[in-house]
Length: 106
Image (cartoon, rainbow, N blue to C red):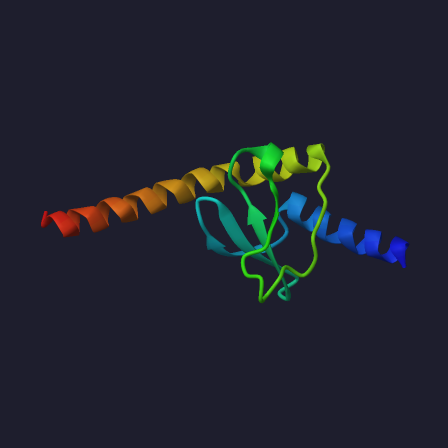
């Protein structure tokens, strides 16, 4: 059983490290992703590669499984998504600016 669990863990870890998933939502701290159109995971994407990990968004709907990443995996996964993270932060800041302009009547 342990061997199968490790095999499944490695399967999902490799998918995440390679970027083989669909991003459902992007936030400044977390992303919600789906692997193989079925398995939901939350990614903690804030605080650099050392903090990259699986994040549980909702205690009532936990991630499919918790995945342990080696440091090299964290760095590879974070490097792959860092450009998208930067672009997402810019999108969020632009939306905040537009909202502020509306509030200020500009």
